[in-house]
Structure formats: C-alpha cells, structure tokens
Image 1 (tube, rainbow, N blue to C red):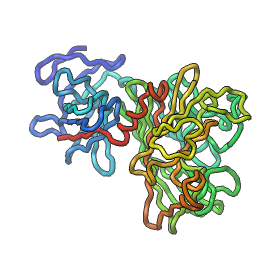
Image 2 (cartoon, rainbow, N blue to C red; image 1 turned 30 degrees about the horizontal axis):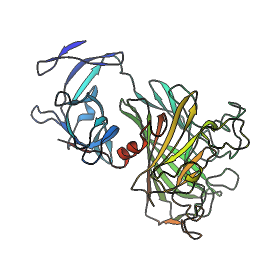
Image 3 (cartoon, helix red, strand yellow; image 1 turned 60 degrees about the horizontal axis):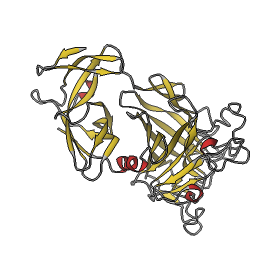
Image 4 (cartoon, rainbow, N blue to C red; image 1 turned 30 degrees about the vertical axis):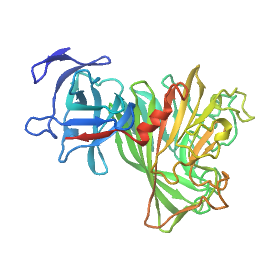
Length: 428
C-alpha cells in the first residue's frame, strides 16, 4: 500500500502480511516539529541482532502515542528501519530496539516515527496471565510459561519450546509420560529456575518436607509488544517452618530476534526479610536449566536416549571439564527434533564474583553459581559463603539465548559482547 509522507515523498511499508496505513513523525520528544533522533555508536565492537535500550529525553510522551514505533535510518544505505518500543525502566522512559548490524567504528542515526496497521503486525511477543501463571507466546504460539504448577517448591519456566514446538527442556518429571525413554534422575531439575541449596542453612534446591520454598506472590506488570514482552514477578523465600527469610523481584524480558532466535533477560534482586541472609558454599545452585537428554554428553544411566550434545564455554574449557570452572558464558547444544539447537547462558559483568563458576554437568544440567567455590575446588571450606546484610540487596543479571545451530554458527561470543558491552546509544 503506497502513501504520502509529511515530507512529500511516497513509500510502501509491509511487515509480513500487514500493511501500514499511516507513517509519520511523532510528538512527545518532538521540539517545534523536529523528530527525536537516536544515534548508535559501535566504538569497540561490531554488533549483530543486539538488543539496545536508550533513555529518552524528559519529559517524553512517546509511549502514549497511538500506533507502533519505528526507527528510520537518516541516511540512505544505512540499513533497514528498526522496530522500537517504549517503556518505563527505573522510573524513566526508555526506548528499546534490536540493532541488526553495525560494524566496529561505525555510527548510525535514526529518526523515530509511528506506524498504524490495519491489523496487528506479525512477530508480536505476547505476555498473558492466567491465575498465577504467565505465558509468553510469539504470534499466539507458545514459547514458554512461568508457572507455579510444575514444581512443588519453586516457580519455573516450563515448557520451553523451539519454533517448531519441540521441547528445549527435559519433560520428566513434569510430564512423566511424555517420553518413557527420558532420564529419571534428579526430579527437582524442572525447566529453568532460580534458587539455591543453602540459604541460612536451608536447602531450597531439592524437593521434600524439610526443604525451603520460593513462592510466587504476584506480578507487578505484564507487557507485550513488537520488540519485546516482559513481566515482573514477586517471590518470597520461606523456610520449612514457613518463616519469611527473604523476598525477591524478578524482572523478565523476552525478545524474538530477526533470525528467529529467542532471548530471555533476567534481573533478580534479593532482599533479606528482617535479619541477614547467608548463601552457603554449595555446588547446587543457582540459576539453572535442565536440557533434553539428546543435548547431554553422557545421559544419566536411567535414560534410553543417545546423548549427542556438546558443552562449550567462553574460556575454551569444554565438555565435561567445564564443570566448576569460571566463564562469561556456557553454551549447551545438540539435536532437538531433527535440527541443531542450543542454549547459551550468560553471566553479566556486574554480577557477584564475575565470571561466576558453573555447575555444568555432562548429563544435561547446567547452572551458574557464584557460591560453590569449595565444592568446585576453588577455595577452603566456606570460601563461597556470602551474606546479604539486613537492609541491603543482592542483584543478579543473566541472559539466556535459545539459538539455532552450534556455538560457532550462533556466534555466541559476539552475542555475549552485545549483552555485556552494548553499543553506545543517545536520544535527543
């Protein structure tokens, strides 16, 4: 569908099967008819499919405009228009987009505009709540669910699915009859989760009458969009006597990249409830995922499935040797549903004891854990203990990339760079 722009030139805009009805400069951050301009600089690295967030000038009413936001290159030949999405982060309006390609040393500027559609464009990230669960879908096809029903003592992400609908996590014991050949070890390994095995001496990792519980107590916000979807979950840490030990706030953001890969960003802030909270030196923690047996190097002996997986790390210490070693990222990849898929977990430079140590097992478990130093052979007994004092907080940030292909094909090293050291961006 062709249409006239305010400047007088004509363009045709299509997104999948949807056509734009209107395309024009927006207000809010406009000053006397001048559109907001976002400038991105790749001063130290090249970037590809990199999520970028930039603070908008205040006051800004961009998010209150009708229609979808888009960034249009100011110079011809500077790439394609980019989808953009505005939202409040930390009390300030920010604009988020996925930068397609920017060579090292390059600078690119975009003008912000709006588009309105006859019907919703494709590649929407949809976040919906039903009771105490939140589902994340792409164009109404389920990707994952944050659920309180898949484990007895913790909320987890389960299932996690490929674009074709194949499981990227082991299904037993959540769906015990889904594949009789799956391994039946460690029943507390369910989907993707965050907890620890020693919190003030209590085990929150395992399942049983004497273990602690992390209890979802609600959601502060849910957000859908054509760049990302997200939600904030509130959690209580309760000991076996049901005493409140700590609370946490989990900020989750999910992207579908232009190549079909999926990104999940986590920021988790733990606050003691009353007295101090000590995370003990133990290998079983903290942010973990159990992948399918096909991705294992050596599946548990209870499995009847052939393991054809690989473990690769940022340091080049790969395979079984990755266990207990520090690394910026760890990638677990192998065959799923007849195709090669992988899951890369990334540790932010701001995290405690970065680069953190990894409880990466060759039987299809991998978790990032800053507290297990003695268990990992990296210090005396108790070397990994860490106490969060009353009135203080402890924050962790992680990115998980669900990708096509192996570590090299997915360029995990560059994907980590985009997470740990994103391009410079300004808006004015």
